[in-house]
Length: 124
Length: 225
Image (cartoon, rainbow over all chains, first blue to last red; front, side, top):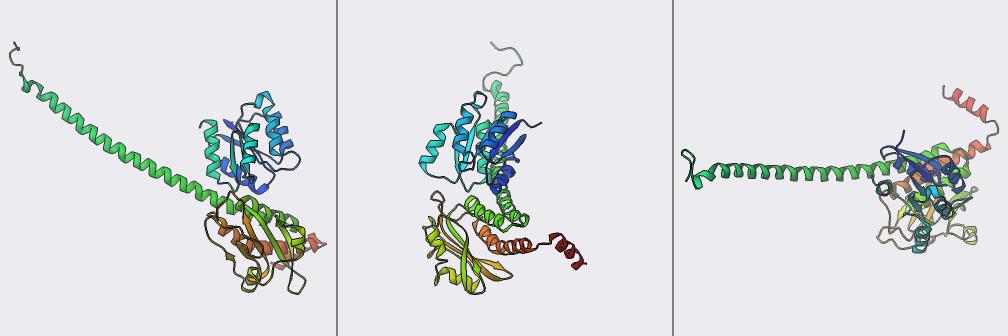
């Protein structure tokens, strides 16, 4: 059984595949995919997750709304959240961090950069 | 008074000095070994980081390439083209034009950051677009930071090829503000888009037009016997 579980919330299939590939390189890590915020909330309700990586611009429920919902849930109040997005402005970054994101990475991403941040936030 | 048979003064310290010298020598040797190990570990960490980066780059190209082979719907292929440009390359403004009809006119089939009215005008002619259509070779502006361009004066103009013939071109005007210039993989991604988009769209288009797909697939096996 995996020691850590990571939820990747991303509507782009290309980006999801890349993130999953990179995160599967972390030892004892199980990666679960969600295509939008609503899909993510559904998966968060039925499983335990140690870290969440989310995009911002997504259909149905965007990443900012998802962060807000996750932080209002007692069981996920302290779970690290990494935002991975094309939105590079300081305003977007501040908004995400103010809502409770722990890290903000702009696309295009480098897999090792995301893995390093995941390890740092999980204390690995 | 000292005891008989026991050396006195400096002579008494001699064995300790020798022992101390040996310890110092061993310490120096161990420090040399530790330094060598540090260098080795640093070297290996650097190599590991390089390998991780290479693996990431290969994965990126694999994922990009896989999408073209997996999709059989032209709209899906265009969606992937947009995703590759936005998500993997960080392209903020671009338009992809394909030849329309038998003449020399082109129509926009995918874009980002370009107004409908600008797209409706077709590609800007007598510039990089016509050059890449004529030559089949890409034009890619270099520099760091890379200046913002326009569709008339793009930072990259890339032909969309089918059997070595340009059937259209991608004009890339601007990268995201937080991306200073081309990344390590971008040239390869542009080449992939240049060579794969056309055949993938053409194959998907032919499949879409084929009403008897099962019969066509059966015929494919026959024709390859």
